[in-house]
Image (cartoon, rainbow, N blue to C red; front, side):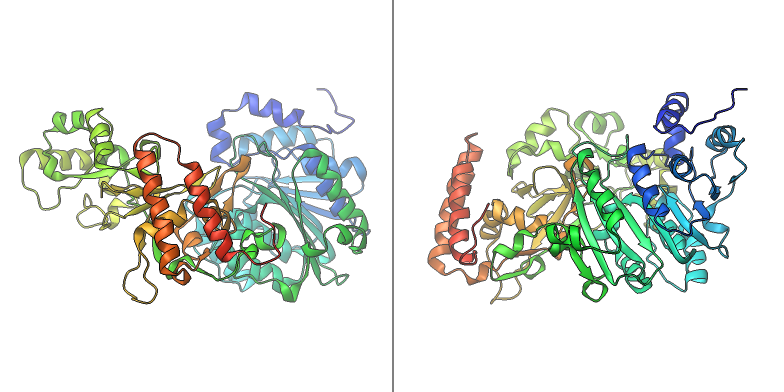
Length: 547
């Protein structure tokens, strides 16, 4: 056996492992490896604790953080936790000659609660709430931290909270995790714990054009914490490229003195008392488009956004013409529905568009046969039960299991994922939609706040609307954005009710012109630009120049 005398200071270990182990296996354990250059920077934060003797790596993998730390300081005691036998055996083989490294094949979340460490460093598993036993682990958190969290909380944040709890006085913690929790509903309670613990020091959002982790569509963030009393401030930073990693080095070497970096990023440094866990924290590290505008109101003032129909098994519930013929399902038992986001190609989805998809044998129906007694219907229901479709998470909660959610067709659809801003579609065909779109239902109950659907939709088509909504988006890797219904409901918009009748008519005239252009396969961008100019004149704060 070859004895390794010098630690591998690159990702060759991880690369070799990835080539030899299937992607399915790695995905099942959420194994997305940290680039060594980032691991080394995070290690420097840990090494900033001058009394560093004990280090914990809660999701050990192949020990990229431990390799980085041991390269700088050999006389530290490292404990690592790992649950995957395959990667554990690989790591054990690598570190078997190092008496200072103790590897345990155990689940970190259920063990080691009473021990404290000088340094904790981690790239935790990226499991969402439905991918792990969240009830049991949340109970562990509640019992040990006296902290009640949302059932939708993702596992990686629970790793972080446990690690903060396990810091010794002056201990330091460095985590690299998705930035999603900073701007999600479940993240409010996590952020509340971070603020109350007063250990949070830096949040560095890594927004590279390429993904940080191969195979993981997420924007990463580096969280640096310290259990000391050296500062009562938190700094937020953005880095857009590998070259920007030197900024992190500067943050670490100047701590706890923010002076050098604060001159460049003064607006990104906040006292704990200024941090509000209830709001999206992207407001603390990303310029907000809405500040350019006056007279803003929540979108929920004029409309309500809910998700599209979730079937529980699209393969079973969606139909095209040929499938309906195959199973003898009459069209009266099929609900017209847009089943794929790419099937709505323009800002207007018409009856003609629906018929074209139908005639091209695209899936445009949902099985909707509640209370039907025809033999063909009963036979198809039996087919679903034989395939245990009725036992799936969503179907098992419905009575009968094959009934659809009660969701009336929405006059406006909005995209869930995008890279170029929200995409709004006028549902002129008046059909239903699956979850690739959210439903928008304009409010018409209040005579004083009601506006026409066409005026609202005209506004939604503008860059102004999309820019303001962007403040409330959730960022993923490689420029991908996601909007949950409440991200839009709570997002801001121009108070269109303040427009006088003449201006409203002018916008509506342009909107009708745009609609005709699109339906005739013409470019209508200049028309939307005209609407944008009208809104700019009405709502932009004086003295502010738009980009």
